[in-house]
Every structure is written in C-alpha cells, then in structure tokens.
Length: 297
Ligand SMILES: [Fe+2]
Image (cartoon, rainbow, N blue to C red; front, side):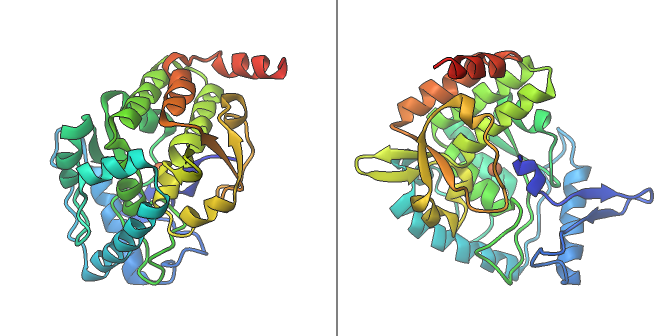
C-alpha cells in the first residue's frame, strides 16, 4: 500500500549532527561512496533550512547537470507525444531550463507569477500532513538531489527531476494549482490518519498518476507519469477506469511497479469536478460517505 512517501530514502541525523541518507540495497548509487556523501550533504542543507532563511543552493556537479540534460531532453520529446494539452501549455509558460538544474528559487521565480506556487527544500520524506497541508498556501516541498548518473532514466525515489519536471510543469497550470490548494485546505479539516491516507491515495491516482482522454488519445497529467521515462509510455497499456473517488481512495497497489490500473478522466473539467470537488468538501467522514454511497449503487 501507499504512499509515495514510502519511496523516499530515510534520512537520519545522529547525536553529533551527521546526516545520513539510507539508500536501499537496490539503489543504483548504494555502492558509490561519492554519491552517498553527496546525498548526505544535500539532505543536511535541507534539514538546516527554516522558513525565512535563504533557500539552499546546490553546487551541482557536471555529472548531475548531465543527468538533468539527458532526462530533460528525453522527457520533453515524450511529453509532446503523451502529455495532456493542459500540461503542455503550462510547461510552455513555465519554460524550465533544459541545460541546467534549476535551483529552487529559480523554479519559484518562474512558477509564482503563473500560479502563486513556490518551492521549498525537503531532505526526503516530509510528513503527509505537512507535505499536503502546505499546498493550502501554495507551497511545495521539493527534494534537491539527483538520481545516480549510472541510470539517468531510472530512479527508485522521487528526485529533483520528479519534483520539478513532474510537479512544477503540472502546477504551472492554474487549474491544477487550484486542485492542489483544495488538497491543502482539506488537510486542515482532517484529524484522522485514515482520512489523510484516503486523501493521499486519491491524490496518487489523480495528480501523480492521472490520465485524461483527448479526442481518441489517452494523455497523462500526473506528475509521476510526466517524470517517468519508462512509465510515460507504459501507461498506454494500463487498464483504464473511470474517475471514482471511492475506488481511488481504497485501491491496493504496488508503488514499486508500473501502475496496472489508471483512472482516466474524460476532460480536465471532469478532474476539477470529481477530484477537485471531492477535496473541496472533504472532511474526516468523507471516506465513509463515498464508500457507503458507492456500495449502494
Ligand atoms: Fe510526487
């Protein structure tokens, strides 16, 4: 079961202040001491950040910049073929750099005039309540590390490429940004972990892995698909189901494989109505209500 949160490598800080990122045994960078030291240093900068302080600037290496250039170019080509028109239009306005990794304040400088969103650093996992709750004031917590250079088109965890190429291109759309804000407002009304988990799961199947029909094509708008070199093509083979909050909020799924079932909207308006509408009124009892309603149909 969920969530994207489980994908992040745990970050700990020892009593003497050393920050350690715990990569899994399967991580492409796990046996690279330079990469591991790099990850620890980048995580430490994020942990040291506090609101009001300058955003950490990462002095990215040539290898990291090269990974960004490769992935940016490949994803830009794939977006033309597979991304939803709404995302393509937003991405064109945002105009992310393809020749270097943007610092978070560079992302915010482009994004804030479009939708009011700004990026702040995350060392790794941000607790769900804080991560989703911060959408209410149009703030997005973003990691700043880059996947290992040995596998530029693969990452087992959300890296800056996912956070920026996936999410920033999406929330550069005022329509999607409004849904994010509704998510944040909903979090403020939730008191139970169960409801928060339900919210996260609906978000997963919409803003992370959502697809939309455009004429006779299926296009993606979810950040997880937009930032995945492999899955952005593979989703064409997924089983598509209509938007349904009750099933999206309770589906059992494996985050480590391509999603075999995706939820397909008929239009961006339907995403706004069904998903945005749900978040706009969601409270602790909403999961029970939608499940009860769907079981009576
Ligand atoms: Fe994400």
